[in-house]
Amino acid sequence: MNKRILGLALPNIVTNITVPLLGMVDMAIVGHLSGDHIGAIAIGTQIFNLIYWNFGFLRMGTSGFTAQAFGAERWDDAVKILIRACAIALTIALLLIALQWPISLAVPYIFESSNHVLGLALTYFFVRIWAAPATLGLYAIKGWFIGMQDSKTPMWIAIALNCVNIALSLLFVIVLKWDIFGVALGTVLANYSGLLLGIIFLRRKFHRNNNLSTLNLKPSTLKDALHWADMRRFFKVNGDIFLRTLCLSGVFTFITAASSHISDQILAVDALLLQFFTLFSYIMDGFAYAGESLVGRHIGAKQQRHLKLAVRLLIMWGMALTVVFTGLYAAFGNQFLHIFTDQQDVITAAGDYMYWVLVIPICGFAAFLFDGIFIGATATRTMRNAMFVATAAFFLIYYGLKYYGLNHIGHLTDHGWNNNLWTAFMVFLILRGLLQAIRVRKDIYSQAL
Image (tube, rainbow, N blue to C red; front, side, top):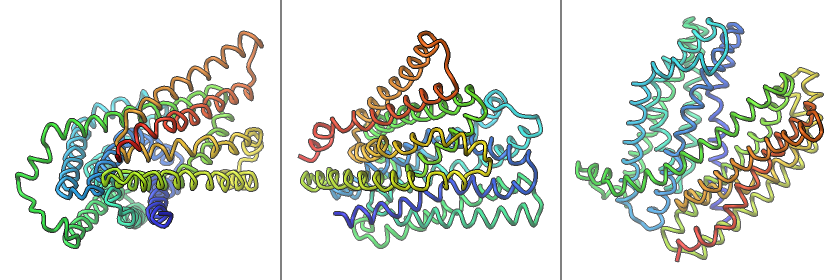
């Protein structure tokens, strides 16, 4: 079982690490043009992060349903899930393209910058938005492969996509001098190259898998895939994931906004500290994806003993990685800060908050793993409710501590204010994991009976 977990988790970790490279490559290339170009890419990338993050259910929901079909050896259902996810992805993508003008009108109200920077950012946006069908289509394809116990294919797609993006962006910007238009165009073409590669891998999967190759893809298959009863369950599960993601993005957006209200220096410090959280999340998400695959598979096959073993080993891997990352952060935390920035005043200020970095793995590992376990079981209602409670607790604790400081102490220093914010964030992480942990027997193990 450990070998199977690592076989699924390690390719997912590689895939996760390559995801932010699209924005980083764009930033690195335009960084040699001007400061306005850097700001424009930062705004443009953030726009698409806000859009696409909320449609992550296309990957998560697809992997859970597919894994259960795989475990039960319902190969026709597995195909229908793929068709259903791709159809929904295409519909959403076309809506985004159709609504690109209204979305662009909101940009100046969300991001404050000069007209020149906003103009460059919108140029980037109006080009890159045409990659929406490829981007969301790849979400569905990636989720389907993970559900089919194949994490290596999404990894190769991600690596190839990033290589194409680097090559095309360099060609369009450095050689052809197409400025920010070239950066966006390179990203668009890279996404479609990834989609094409994904389709090629799908064809090969269907050709080589005897269980899939015997299925006849007829018009009736498409009709069955879009049957209302199945679509309703698909939307119910993905609706829960969508609401959960909205809460998650709301908390992280609030952290950045609250930091900026404390001071510019605290904003920079918290941005650095969150990099430690992001690094840990890339690793833990790899094991969470493995949980999606294995939990769904064993529930579909009604193998409760294997299901319990998989969950137990995933938790053990999470605890082991928590010890490793806590040790690494304790030993090399300051060195990591120097990698992220050379501003000594920010590094010095961040040193006053490094104890929060040490507890990030301890407070957060269970939240990541149980998200994967509950997605694999399509028990998304519990995951959604846990997120609702954790989010409410985050804001209650933050504002409660703020109110106490202002009314009983008389003032809040920047240091105290920021500690309140991080206290609320750690409670948020703990509650997400704890509230799901107490429901494992009822919501997860019972499904394999």
